[in-house]
Length: 282
Image (cartoon, rainbow, N blue to C red; front, top):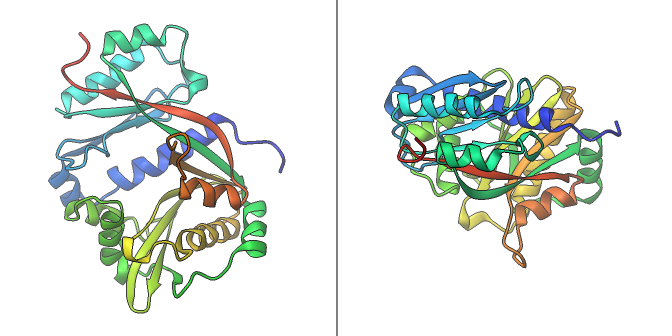
């Protein structure tokens, strides 16, 4: 492979993984969190009315099957108003934003938020880099998550990201073993100290999450998780790996970005968050 994935491939990969992990959770978990989801504009919109973090209500993947217009954005906002969502984030690839995007934002009450980097890596290249350069993580072991470990893995993932456990941990753990999902954990002896997941959509592997508890950081766990998922993607026949990380402040060191670039990923583009709140717009 030589061509870089087009934005549609990268965005749909993330959208499908996000939709499945949230909307595919067991019904009692969805009810506890007030979760709902819909497909709109070729993408997805997910609402979590009782989200204690403000992270999980997102709309993404739009703008490829049909253009981004004021009517499409109003449809998304209407969904969030109907769900009584406290706030939501719209994530759109820069290539799909129309010339009148500023006017659409003003009408819908959208404001600019964080910036993310969309990354892609050719699977064979990343596996080759990992085999050539990766050192075993110091004192850590990486292994696929077994079904009986799903609850513990979900709890560790939420703690590693600084999020409360409860229903969110149940939601994360419920993806373990589900079709299309590959979940890995890092272990320090008998203690599960980190993990990461991967979702396969068509021939693309979406790296989803990836974090380590504070006491086990700086020991190579993240790189080992990246390598394990790349090998699983290769075994699943995926040609490309897709990942995201926050764009760091100028002069700061983003270890997640550093580790992915070192293994052969490349930055495709920067993507702005657009924040919606029910008090905005008309």
